[in-house]
Image (cartoon, rainbow, N blue to C red; front, top):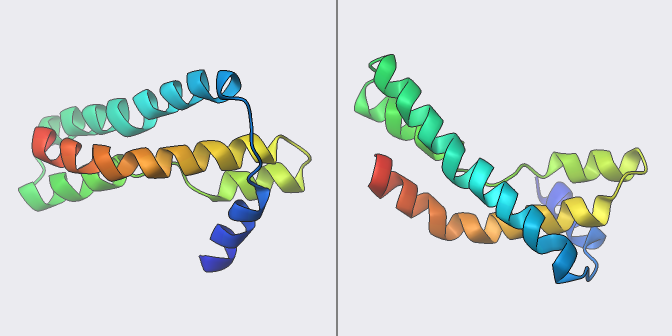
Length: 105
């Protein structure tokens, strides 16, 4: 995992905020808010135990995985954009994970 984090960190470059802002907003809404909401609904329907439900919510509220940035770099896609979005969702997740656990947990 540290090697992946180092690789993603090396891909970071300054990008214009006009490019990043809409993408960060979309990812934050989809990954950090809607996904835990859908998982909470599913856990209610399947009558999970409280421990199972909280575990599912924590996994669902996690930031975007780092591996896509490595794939982007390997297959000549926009790895800088991927790395920037990963960094943004990771920073946002520090605030949204506690909110999701309190709100839905």
